[in-house]
Amino acid sequence: MESAVDSIWGALVLATLAGASIPLGAWLGTFHRHIMPDWLEDEARHGVVAFGAGALLAAVALVLIPEGSERLAPAPALLWFFAGGVGFALIDRILGKTGGRLSQFLAMMMDYLPEALALGALIVGDPGAAVLVAGLIALQNLPEGFNAMREMSQDRPVPLWIFFVMVPLGPLAAFIGVTLPAEQDALIGAVMMLASGGILYLMLQDIAPQVRLDNAMLPPLCGVLGFGLGLAGDLFI
Image 1 (cartoon, rainbow, N blue to C red):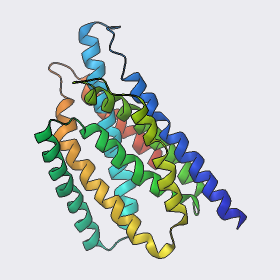
Image 2: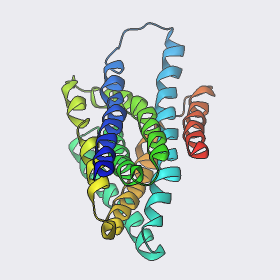
Image 3: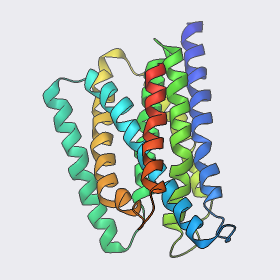
Image 4: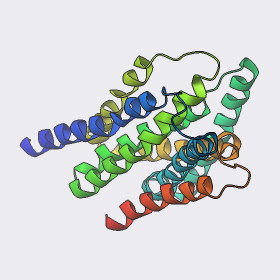
């Protein structure tokens, strides 16, 4: 009983610390002063977008798909993956018609919540892996919070409290991951595969096109760096 309580508290603390980088990244995204030459500021901004894209790709390839497909048979895993892609294509189309700029924000939350769910499911059997997943989530959330704030505030200012409100959702997902009965593993797997398909769609449709900058190598290299750090975390698990 004591071990189960320790696992719950550990999952809540890790998910909260990982989620804290969301408002931190968003706060950094509120600075619009020209503190660098124009060319360097452009490269830095595109580089952060690319880094976030690389980190998202790492989340899909190294955490969500492996953990999700392990809990499902191949056919349901593929079905949920494609359902995520199609579902978020429809959401993106609706947002596009209403003029919304939420692709980065949606991708961030679709990454944060299923990974927090995985963190909760992992901490019971492998606390070390849960700590590394929490570090990976925090690493991803920082540039994703930055990118989401910059994207959403293009037309009008966005209050920072919106990003603070998102933080407690991670511990809630981690709590569900810890306490959900083992026979509900398929449900966790379905959520992870659904998120994977949705994230991949948003990356290819809305995020990756923002990375390219004429005559500049730094932004795509930042994408490689973002994925490489995610890969490093996976290799050390």
